[in-house]
Length: 146
Image 1 (spheres, helix red, strand yellow):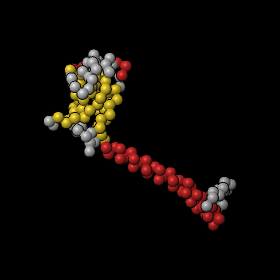
Image 2: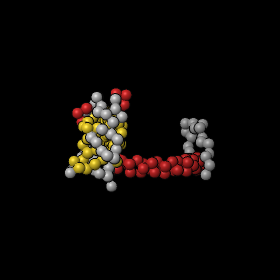
Image 3: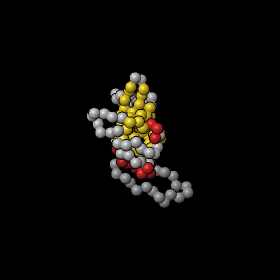
Image 4: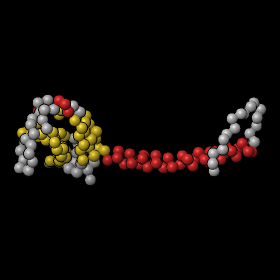
């Protein structure tokens, strides 16, 4: 049903008539029909957000100290230093997203974030081409593993 312009010239002593109530109910129905699709979208969005939150294990702010970087070599990769960051929420199948908060203070190329469970130590590694000379402020998110 289409929108019906409401009565706006009410005076003291006016009593609503059957016609007024029919108009009010018709306008409520019209508003409901306009809003209903938005409620479905909101519900879908809420479900998507809740599903993403359910996958989070941890959100952590952390400073990687210079002392955390150790020399490391591998035949498969071209890097020379590795920092190990521990978090009980990390398992071998976790996904870890890292944001470097002060990238302008870094004097090394940071690359590679790899979750790893090593003899019960729940860690992830950050790799660099050189040992950073400053501590690195990061924020990281750990998503649950499979």
